[in-house]
Structures are given as structure tokens and as C-alpha cells.
Amino acid sequence: MTAQLIDGVALSRQLREGFAQRVAALKARGTTPGLAVVLVGDDAASQVYVRNKVKACGDVGMHSVLERYPATLTEAELLARVEALNQDPAIHGILVQLPLPPHMDAQRVIETISPAKDVDGFHVASAGALMVGQPGFWPCTPHGCLRMLDHIGMDLRGKHAVVIGRSNIVGKPMALMLLQRSATVTICHSATPNLKAHTLQADVVVAAVGKRNLLTADMVKPGAVVIDVGMNRDPEGKLCGDVDFEGVKEVASWITPVPGGVGPMTITMLLANTLESAEKA
Ligand code: GUN
Image (cartoon, rainbow, N blue to C red; front, side, top):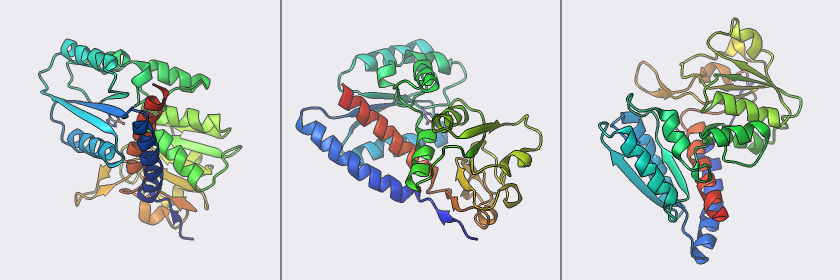
């Protein structure tokens, strides 16, 4: 069996065409959706990510500002910038790129963002809303994964979903979203003995650890759907995920590639959240 590809580039293109129309409608009513992206320091990967986010805004007609600060910025100065953006009516979404320099308390910075503009969905109020099933912004990466499962028409009710990874950004919110869809959810992590025993039971596996070849073909139930959130480099420097793509694609029914899978969907869901915030404003 060779799995079908869940193409995050094509799905993103389709969704973003719809966003561009909604942006145009909002502009006609006098509101241009605006995203502020704040980058502190010169982390190489972060620079690429923020550039992609800002470009994506422009592509659908949204306003965006990129605020770049040296790693020497104090936490108090950053908090003051976030507070100013909270008050700025041209800004509907605020994203502080992580990681922050070690002298800053990232959670304190995130808690300073107004929940109404928390388009990353990292604020404790957003996390709590997801937990109890109230409206709020959902973290973009797991939301993008869910959107991909919807796209292939997967009915998650009663299915066994195994999430590998327990981060606040991906693993935990992913598990809650799958639970909300009435899947039976298992969260595996670095202290889980015999990961394979769990993944072999799964109808859906979401791999979100950051470790190349974490999930191999012998760990996947034939016909399972495999979502790869990993972003790693192989020894030749080529981008790869957490899944041994070549092996697993012979066992799975659907699989996301890296690159071209979850990555573009993360940015697409950021645009979705920013647009939703502007529509509410
Ligand atoms: N760093 C890695 N991924 C993300 C993300 O989705 N949002 C922010 N703010 N920082 C990140």
C-alpha cells in the first residue's frame, strides 16, 4: 500500500484564497486585518519563520508589522511594547516569536498579550478556553493538523488517536482538539515505555517531538493516518520530520510530507485567527 499525500501547500492555497476574499470584504467596510510580529534576538530559524508569516499576511491583503529587537532588550521594554500593541486599533493579532532570550520569562510575556489578540493561542486564557470547550484562539499548528484531518474527511469519533509529544504549543492542545472530536486519545512522551505498543493501536498518529526517524514503518498500523509535525535536518542538511516518510508511506493510508505538510498549515491558521480577530473587532 502506498499512502496518499495530505498536501499542506495545496490546502493552504485553497484556504488562503477564501481568506483573501474575507479580507477584501472587511477592507470594504473600513477595517484592514493587522498582525504584529515581534522578534527578539537573532535566532536563525525564527528569522525565517517571521519572514514567512509577514509575507503570508501580505499575500492575502492583510496589514502586518515586524518589530525586531536586539537580544539585549529588557523584559520590561518588551512588556511595554506588547501593552502598546494591545491598545493599537490597527493590530488584531500579536505574535511574539519564541524562543525568547534566556533572561526573559516567556510565559509572563505571553500573559501580557490581550487574549482578544492572542492569535498564537498560547495565553493561559486561550489554553483554558480550549480545555473547557469555550470560544477562543486555538494554537495554529495543532489546529492546522485538525484541518488536514477534516480535509481528508476523517471522522474522528471513536477513533484511537496517539499524540507523541506533550508541549504546550502542539502535543497538549492537539490532544484536547482530538478529544473534543470524540477520539480516544493517548499522549505519549519521552517517559513512555514501549512507544510502539501505543502507536500500533492508533488510527491516527500525530508526531510532534522534534526527533528524526522517531516513527518507523514497524510502529504504524496498516491504513493509519500519519501527521508529521517534526522539523528536523537529516545528516545531508535536508529538512525532514519525525516520521521515516519512505518507510511509513508504504503502511499508512494518508501521510503529511515534510516540507509541504503541517508547516504551511501553521501559517494558514495564524492568518485564520488574525482574520477572525479582525472580524470580531
Ligand atoms: N516558535 C516556534 N513555533 C512558534 C509559533 O507557532 N509561534 C511563536 N510565537 N513562536 C514559535
